[in-house]
Image (cartoon, rainbow, N blue to C red; front, side):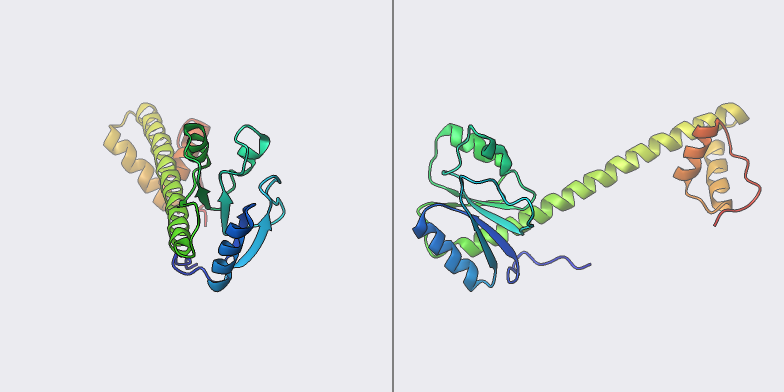
Length: 200
């Protein structure tokens, strides 16, 4: 499946969480021009739980940082934060929110598209990095299983590490299995599994 380009925003859904009418009108107008659908929510309310959004544009100054809403806005969609207050407590809360992009208030008619592109790109990078880390962790877990299985075969068949690994690899190939799958079986049964037929 082809990933959407961060530069392509038309057709994406935005949740706008702003109280100031002037700022709402600026954001709404720009998002409409970009071909995005807009849903508005008051900062005093919790985010809609039954809808999925591609991006959340939130006025970070209007959400009380010492309330349930402060954590409710840690949503899965990338966040574009509007920032006007630069107190340490507010900025710390903002960092915990992990916005993908931001705009400094007062808002102007320019800059929102750039913030959206940065947000979409940042969100995709985070997703890619999380998937890469998960793959690495899977490989590390698999290597531990293979190493434990090779040790088992070394002890039970009095083989060297190289010969034990060769035996595991050849057995896996013969039974059309992966080395990792066979290694897990070896550990489970305490030795080389007794297979009389090939598995598909």
